[in-house]
Each structure stands twice: as structure tokens, then as C-alpha cells.
Amino acid sequence: MANDTSYHSCPNPSISAFENALQQFDDAAKILNLTPNQIVVIKEPRRMLEVKLPVRMDDGRIEVFRGYRIQHNIARGPAKGGVRFHPNVDLDEVKALAFWMTFKCAVVNLPFGGGKGGVVCDPSKLSSGELERVARRYFAEMIDVFGPDKDVPAPDVGTNSEVMGWFMDTYAMHKREYVPSVVTGKPVELGGSEGRTEATAQGIVHCIGEVAQHLGMDCAGSTAAIQGFGNVGFYTAKILHKQGCRVVAISDVSGAYENPKGIDIPAAMNYAREHKTLDGLERTDLAEKMKDPMELLELEVDILVPAALENQITSKNASRVRARMIAEGANGPITPKADKILNEKNIFVIPDILCNAGGVTVSYLEWVQNRAGYYWDNTRIQEELSRIMKNAFKNILMTSEQYGISLRIAAYVVGIQRVTRASEMRGLYA
Ligand code: NAD
Image (cartoon, rainbow, N blue to C red; front, top):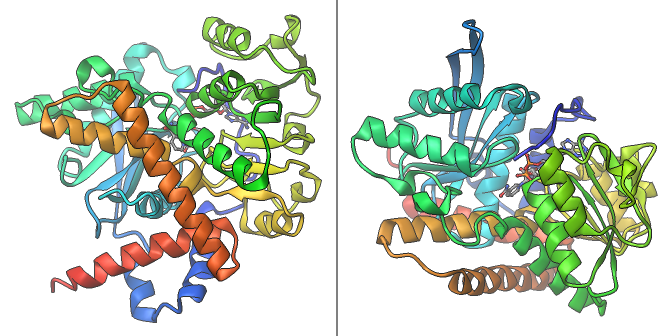
């Protein structure tokens, strides 16, 4: 969850994330020669709900928050996707995030469709009580939308396991029964899975390891820069550091911090935990503050991990990116125009719908455990996660080589094929 005291506004508010997502879809649909009938069924979101959430604030005022839930596609299973609490949440962004979830779940072959939700709010400015009331009101308004076989949310930017616990409890109070599988990313004490907190980061590192092997690179001794120090960025930094990688720059909403000799990541993590932000890290001997935080993306490193928000690498800065590989921890951090520039520069991009699928993969394992009422230890979780991520990576790499296309388009080719096949086999109900 975001630990910040404030949020920057979106750096590129004029870029539509959903338009970008559709562009990626179109590029892959051309390769597959999809028919108009096939396209029209799976391209646009199937259900969109907008709600207004009246919430009593600590000072007695009633504030009305706007919330969304979108189910992009449910051909392969219940909608699956996180809920984002952020001031810049809007319909366009949630549509894009739901779209990406459909194809992400298909890429790693999980029996889920794609969904996403969000509430326009700044969690860093809410008290714990206010946050809980926003979360519970959101879930209560959506009570008929969510369900273990209908739509299963999870954490995203600005939400965490505590919020998932409130979601689950709200559902249980309405249904008068214990239904842990209605939401994933819960605390372990409430039926959450071992390994879920670090799962997205662990999946990213599995992908990085596969690419390193493919490129004949050694992760130990390589350099990395990581944008975002929340759930995804924080644990990616931790795991890469543990594997002997030199993390030379990290950032959060307060700015970017650099140390060419390598940042002592455990110490930076302690700092972030204690201060709830990286703000002031330059006053320690861990790192210097960079003048412009966006310069982190332009550092000459082996591995660049954008792990904050979408539209960070655009046609404006892509030509200045000097990383050898980019692992998309965030959803949609690279625009299609930037993608082309990076391709021309031979920068190896691991696309979001593959790279950050470790989170939803362990969410799936959590859902399975909840339904079975039988819980696995972390060793089993790590084995399953590693197997699923590595198989998906190999399949996408093979597809990209087979068609001579980027890994991103290859991931869409695989995902779209699976969703189209399921849609056609189900047929049209009426
Ligand atoms: P989070 O709220 O835990 O962390 C977000 C981080 O980004 C914070 O450190 C925040 O300070 C930082 N940030 C925000 N704006 C920034 C800016 N302009 N520059 C630099 N840093 C900035 O969120 P998260 O769960 O880590 O999610 C990050 C990204 O990963 C999102 O795109 C999300 O959709 C994606 N993702 C998350 C998961 C998951 O399991 N949490 C899974 C898949 C994908």
C-alpha cells in the first residue's frame, strides 16, 4: 500500500490508458487475423458500474466518494482484479486495468476473467477509520457484483491486506456466512495465502531471471533502478538485492534516490517502514536525491523496473532510456509509441500482462485454498508460482520467436487466443 504523505498528479493525464490498451489489442488481433465478430465480443468491457459512496468523516462531515467496478470479460471464469484507491482513478483507467486483467489471467492460464475497481480518494489523507468506512461502503454498494464465482477483488495501488480483510468482513456480514474466497490478498490470519504479499515481485524476478538467461546475463552483479517503493517496488528491490543485484536507484512519490555503488536495500526498507515514505533518505548516507525523479528511468542500468503507475515511459522520454531490459512491474507504464522506440533500441521489455502476473497467480492459489479449506506452506506456493511464471514466460518467448514479434504482442496473441476460444465454445446465450 502507498505509504506516502501525498501523491503527485499523474504525469501524463492526457494519455488514455484504455486507448493504449486497445492499440495493443489491435496489433495482436492483426497477427491472429481475428474476424470482426471475434473482436467485438472480447474487446470492450462487458459490465461497468459507477457508485457514489457517502462516508462520514472524522469531523462529522459527509463526503461522497466515487467508486467503480468493471468486469471486462468473464468467459474463462469469475472476473479477477484489484481495487485501486487513488485520487487520479477514473473510468478510462479502470477500463484499461480491467482489460489488462483479462489477458493477464489468460497469459498465465488461470481460470479467471478480468475486472478492476477503484475509488477516487487519497488514502494518505484519510484516517484509518475513514479508510475503513470508505472500503466497507464500497464493498456494500457492490455486494451483488462480488462473489467467489462472480468477481473476486484484490489489492492494488492504495489498498492492502487490511483493506481486503474489511472487504471480506463486509461481505460476511451481509451474507451471514464466512466466505474467504470472495477476495484475495487477505491477511494470512483471515485465510490469506503464504507468499501473496511478495508474489508480484517474486513473479517479476522470475521473469527477469528468465530474460537474463536468454540474454546470457548474470543477475548477480547486474544493476537495477526501480520506480515506486510500494508493494511491487519494495519487494522487487528486496529480492533483487538478495540475489546480488546492485540496486542503484529507487523512488516513491517523494522523489528518486540514487547511489551508484548500490543502495543498502534492507536499510532503505527500514527507513521507508519507519517514516512511511522515502522522503528525507538523502539525509542518511544511503543515497542522494535526484534532481528530477523521472531521470531514474533514464539511468544506464541492466534492469529497469517501473513499479508505480501507468504512462511513465512515453514518446517524450523513451529515446533516452538506456536500460538493457525493462520489467513492467506496474500496469501500462510504457505507451505504445514508446514501445516502438524501445523496440528499435533493442531494449528487452517484459510486458506487464506477463511480468506482474505473479500477484494474480498467488491470488488464484489463495482462492483455491479458501475453497478447499486446506492451506499450503510457502514452499508449495513458491514451487507453484515459479512453475506457472516460468512456463508462461517460455510460451510467450516461443510465440514471439515464432511470429517474429515483441514479447508484448506475443503475450496478447496467447491471451487473446485463449479468451476467444473460450468465448466461442460458450457461444451466445441469447
Ligand atoms: P502501492 O500503492 O503499494 O505503491 C505504489 C508506489 O508508487 C508508492 O511507493 C508510491 O509512492 C509510488 N508512486 C506513486 N506515484 C509515483 C510517481 N509519480 N513516481 C514515483 N513513484 C510513485 O502500489 P503497488 O501495489 O505496488 O502497485 C504498483 C503498480 O503495480 C500498479 O501499476 C499496480 O497496478 C501494479 N500491480 C500491483 C500488483 C500487486 O499485487 N500489488 C499486482 C500487479 C500489478
